[in-house]
Structure formats: C-alpha cells, structure tokens
Image (cartoon, rainbow, N blue to C red; front, top):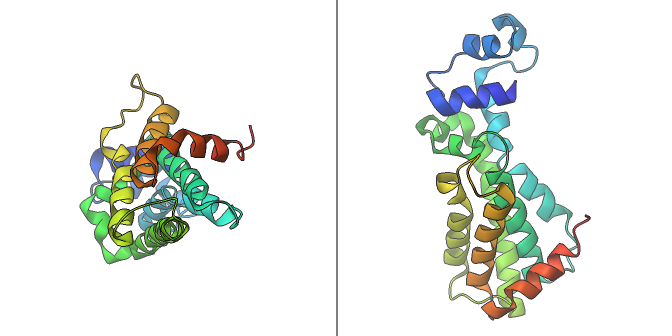
Length: 197
C-alpha cells in the first residue's frame, strides 16, 4: 500500500492524489483503506518517516565510544543509502509544497532530530580533532545538503547502483570534514569492519 501511495504522490502530488485512487491502486475499497491508515495524511507521514528513521536508528544504536569520524561515516552511509534505495524516491516527497504545511510538522521535527545527530557527531569530531571546520552549524548544513543532494540527481534503474551512489556521496561528505582527507579510506575501512556482513 505504501509503495502504491508513494507512486501516486510522487507523480501527481499530495493534493491531487485521493484516497479513492490509493485504494484502487492496491485493490481495496476506499472505506477499507481506513483500517490501515485513517487519513491520507497518515500515509504521507509514514512515507516521509521512512526517509529519516533508518539513519536515526543507526546513529542511536552506535556505541558512543566509537571515534566520531567512524560514527559519522556510519551515519552518512546509512542515510545516503536509504535515500538512494527503494523503488521510489521517497525523499522527493519532502520537496512537494504541501509537505511544508503544519500537518506534517511531526516529520519535520524528526528530520530536525536527525540534523541534531549530525551536529552532535560533527561537534564531537571537531573537539576530538579528527574533523575540521570553522563553524559547526555551517558544517552540519553543508553535510546535510551534500547527503540530500542524492534526492535530486540519483536515477533509479540507471547505470549507478544505490550502494555506489550512496558510497560516493557519503565519502565526499566525510572527506570534506576530515582534518586529514587522506585518512578517508582508513576511516571507512574501520567503520565498515563494524558492520555485520
């Protein structure tokens, strides 16, 4: 149901998509849809949440004793891969004008929490000396911008795989912040050794 809803929202927009269309796309009667999601808004929020939850779950589950640059790589790579993977570009939904309405403030609060995790991780790296930037807030905004750029250029089904696109973007973001960018491959290898195969 979420995949069919995403397809409709992405191609028609939020306002133009009706619950009748969503129900028809999944072979339900319109009234039956409310057993799963009471309102169209709830479907949209569930889709938006999928763009931030994996990264939040990853960073919140990491050992706080890990080096900040290792934590940052794991956050970056998870976030980038989540945005690039999947059949639909769910993150593009946040670019719809309707997504900015007060109805969806819950999603924007979760996105702000993710941004806070980036800030905390980058600030820890600056204190540790492994990351370098003159302004932590600017570093966070730039990093977040680099990560979310994948929404606009990555082509699903194209020649670049989601994993390769995510790795490329995450690597660029990490290298831009490392005190010694030449250490980027060492940091990635150390972080990847922590990820179960």
